[in-house]
Image (cartoon, rainbow, N blue to C red; front, side):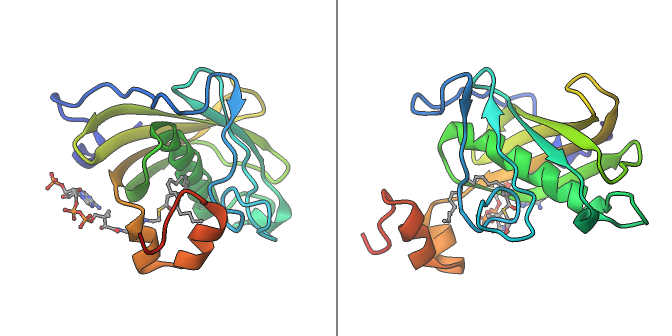
Length: 184
Ligand SMILES: CCCCC/C=C\C/C=C\C/C=C\C/C=C\CCCC(=O)SCCNC(=O)CCNC(=O)[C@H](O)C(C)(C)COP(=O)(O)OP(=O)(O)OC[C@H]1O[C@@H](n2cnc3c(N)ncnc32)[C@H](O)[C@@H]1OP(=O)(O)O
């Protein structure tokens, strides 16, 4: 992975530990928002990623590239692949049970991805320093050990839940996150 200093954990970064309340190894993570472009079941043209954590530390999902995802004829659009990387990384940071947002996403495109390809996505965290999480992901063609088509590195920054209410739709959050009080 070609990575900038911004997405490289500093020497003092802590090794990540899953939250005690995080989904246990072998379980599905679920969607954080039903209309999310990356994982929402109710999004009409979204990626519909459904992630599992095999070990409580990494997350995996499959993404089959469709005709709606083309850039060049019958080849995946790079922005769609970056969105898939952003989503799988976002799902991996969900293991910490704290809200994070993408601050920076770096993507290496290694091989073209034809429409019809199933990409096996995997993401993990390389370190945490204060509010900053340093994460990585890859997408492999056809199988979990298939050739790498895409790699990504990201800096995610922890925010409070009010971030989403302040900048987005507080009522939509409350409708799906019943432990979230809009006006505590
Ligand atoms: C039903 C609704 C559900 C609501 C959500 C519920 C749960 C959400 C939780 C998890 C979600 C789970 C899964 C999500 C899956 C996929 C989604 C993908 C994620 C996204 O798609 S999310 C959308 C795109 N994303 C944004 O919409 C962010 C816009 N942005 C901002 O909101 C601010 O920009 C913010 C908050 C990032 C920082 O702002 P801030 O004021 O809080 O903090 P500050 O600026 O001080 O940064 C603190 C330290 O990070 C460094 N830093 C910051 N940005 C940097 C950069 N770009 N490069 C290098 N360093 C950077 C600073 O240099 C400083 O470093 P230092 O501490 O060393 O000085």
